[in-house]
Length: 175
Image (tube, rainbow, N blue to C red; front, top):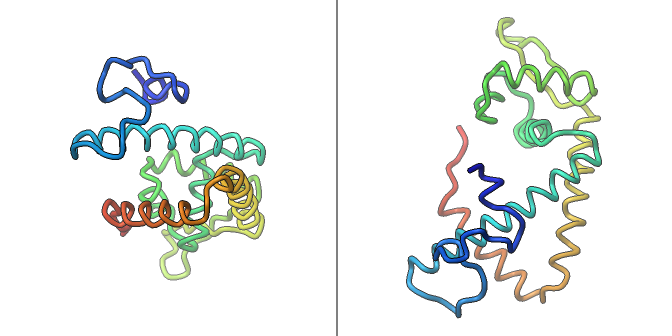
């Protein structure tokens, strides 16, 4: 079973009899194991919905998820050698080479020889790529604004604080 098949449609759990799959509100808290199982299930469901909507947004802009990931890395970290981009994306260099070729044809990035080591090819974000990052992020923010606008400010602040704390617990800094 693939991850997508496992997640299925939001609220459509095939394994309703499985305690790891059951949905719904089960009270304020349970045992640590019950809380973790519930947390994992909710995180998986939220991730699926956000990922699906994110792909729709990217399709509106004519780029793929891997292309956007590469643009984000270059936006955040600046130009980098192809090998570093491969490592950051956890993809084979041949895959990233094809990806960068398509982005270069689209005018989002450019490949350049490193000034200090002519054997190294660096990838640099072009203004069109920078603009694409800003447009996609603005569209994602609009989407989430529509959802989070229904939460009171105090609840949003609590949710953000908890998510930041969890992120700090699981975050593994990049090299």
